Amino acid sequence: MGIETYIDYLKNYDGPDVTFMEVCGSHTAAIAKSGITKVISPKIHLVSGPGCPVCVSPSGYVDRLIALARQPETTVCTFGDLLRIPGTSESLNEAKGSGASVEMVYSPMDVIALAKEHPDQTYVFGAVGFETTVPVYTVLMEQVESEGITNIQVLTALKVMPPVIRWLCDNGARIDGFIAPGHVSVISGSKHFEALSREYGIPFAVTGFSPKELVVGIYGLLRMWEQRQKLLAEGESLTKNFYPSVVTHDGNVIAQAKVEKYFEPGPAVWRGMGEIADSGLYLRKEYAALDAGSRGLDEDHKINKACRCDQVLMGKITSEECPLFGKVCSPLTPQGACMVSSEGSCYQRFLNR
Ligand code: SF4
Image: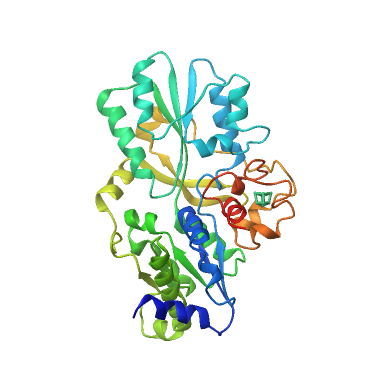
C-alpha cells in the first residue's frame, strides 16, 4: 500500500473515538512538527505521555544537584535542558547565578576532560534519561574505571519505560494504544512491550520519527486496535515493530549487558506521579564510589500550584487545557517542567499553536 492509502484510512476513520499515547519526547516533537494531527480523523486523539526525561525529573532531584553544586570543590555538569528545570525554590541556572558551580556539557564524556584538567575538583554528572541514554553512561563508567579517575561521580535520575506505562494503565489513564518509543526500542527491542500488551490487551506500535514513519505506525496501531479481539483470540502479539530499519525484536544485546553490569532497578520518583516501583536505574553496590547519592529522592513539589504538568504527563488533559498555558507559562517563563525542554509536550504545543 502507498502512503496515501494509509493517510486516507486515518483521515476517513469513523469508528469509536480512540486515544493513542506517545511516550517518547522525540515523538512528541516529531508529531507536533509533522502536522499529522491536522490530517487524521478528529476521532483519533494523540496525547503525550511521560516521555521527556527532563520533564519527569522531580524537583527533589534538581534540589539535590543544587546542594552538591554548593559544596566546596564540587561542580555539577549536565545537559542544557536540565539547567532550566525548576527545583523547589530555584533552577540550576538560578543557583549558578548566585555562586553554585554548574557547567553545561554536551556529552557525559566532556566530564572526563574537565576532571583531568582540574584534579582537585569533584565533577558530578546529572544523569537523566531512559533506556536509550543509559548505555552512554556505561561508557563513561568504563572510562572512569579503566583510567582510574577518582574525581567523577554521577547523580542519576535514570528511568525505564515499562513500569510507568503499567502505572498509567493502573491509574486511570484512558489509553487505547501506545506509540512505542523508537529510540528506546533500538536498545531494548520490540520485546520490551510484549508483556504489557498481553497483560492489558492494548496494542503497541514501535514507530519511527519521519512523517511517513509516523503515518505507518499510527495506521498500524489503529488497525491492531480495531482487530485486537481477533488478534488476542488467535494468540497474536499486540506489539508490532513498524521501525524495522533500526529496531529488532531483541534489541542491542551488547548494550543491554553493559547496562546490566553497572545498573540495577529501584524505585524512582516521577514529576507529577510520585514514586513508581522498579522504574529507576541505580549504580550497583560495587560502583557505589561513583554515586553522588542518587537513591531516596523526596516527593515532587510544584513551583506553581496551578501547573497541571502531572495531568499532562498522564495524558488526562492537553497542554491547552492548563489555565496557565500561553498566559503566564511559555518557553521564556516556564512554570512547569513540560514547558522547559524542547521535548516537553507544553513546549511543543506552544511552538506549534
Ligand atoms: Fe505546567 Fe505550563 Fe504545562 Fe501548564 S502549560 S501544565 S503550567 S508546564
